[in-house]
Length: 188
Image (cartoon, rainbow, N blue to C red; front, side, top):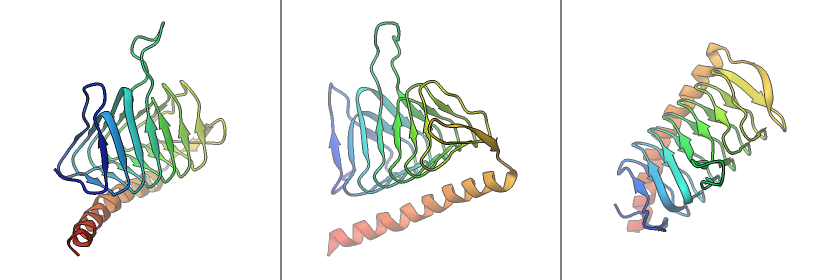
């Protein structure tokens, strides 16, 4: 599929694999061993660089404007390295830095937050805006973590979890509108 204004860069024999239904906004750069699932959205000016390991993004996940995603290669004592694995229905806020970690299904990363190698954000868990989840830290399911370094602040109630799910649905719908707007702009 042609994606005008998107920089798709194969490297080391690996070319990004992007589902046809995914919205990739103009200004994004996607490098190497990246897989993006159905109905996911990568918003304006994001960089996904999988030049030394892999990045896998599930379905209906959104990576919002200006975010940077990367991974780490295998090293002595760490033969698997730190790939970046992101599940389904994940929300990643604007200007987040996500590096070599795991975000389970329906996880949430707030604006400007950082998640480092081998950290795990559990299902329905939230890393608060501006927080830094340091290397190897693991949140439980339905927990809110915040601060620098991040620590557990509280469990999330049903209203917070439902709010995150509404956010996922909003971004999936909004991506369809932006895809149509980009297509229309290219025609004029």
